[in-house]
Image (cartoon, rainbow, N blue to C red; front, side, top):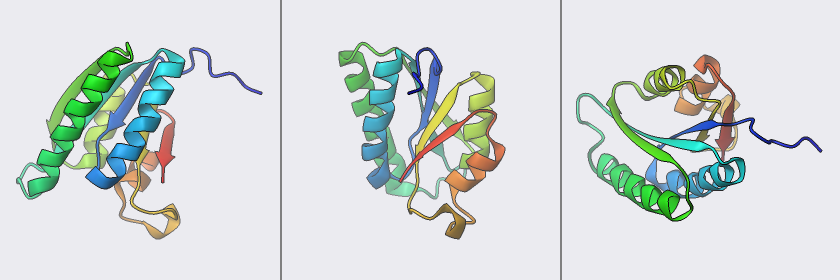
Length: 133
């Protein structure tokens, strides 16, 4: 079996839709702990402010993950950016030279989600993407 030792020094976790973010956060934290990776948390806000309550929920989730990562001894950085999510995620991945992006998706069949952020990130990402359904 392939060991993942030191394969993922830096992991990017963009906090997406609040319902999926909690389950995906657990996977990202487990991976970062197992790999002794730095974890970068990213909240992307709509520049026109149309994401309303979701933005507040994502920020609350970010605070919870920061607390949990600190308790687990994971080096963690939090970023807040504005723009189109898929493009911002890929830009941050490139800028921070991340080894893996861990993100959730609203559905199971990515082929049916032509407009999903996860599909767009998979197409544009400068590194591997782990999608958690």
